[in-house]
Length: 63
Image 1: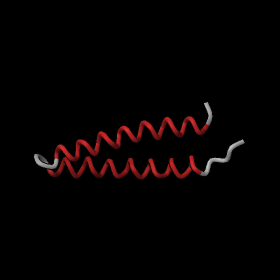
Image 2: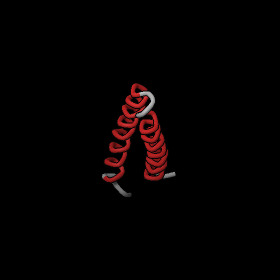
Image 3: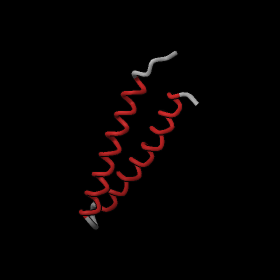
């Protein structure tokens, strides 16, 4: 497995987790604002990791 494939698999997994957390944040918005904020914070941290991976995969040197 190449480095690009590993990065893409990790991106896919993080993207799915991000979408799930954002959906939870949206669903909790009406019932429990604290849980909504926590889910949104976790989603933002995942988005930061995703952006880092996208940056490194974009600048990956091809041999």
